[in-house]
Image (cartoon, rainbow, N blue to C red; front, top):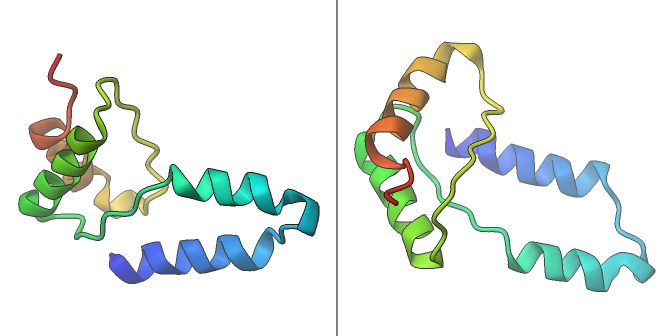
Length: 87
């Protein structure tokens, strides 16, 4: 859920402190990261994710599933239905 994703981002910020010397690289890294909030089981949310990826211009896609096992089926079915590479 959205709360899980936000928690992950906050956790990342708290656990991985960035030194002053690393700030430029960290800022550059964050510029190329995108966030798309959505539900694990709503095809329309995966459609929005697909649109966001298309707008970036990517063609090859790799999804990292840091998810509870209980939602794997729903997420992978939605990814297959809406977010697979078109080319």
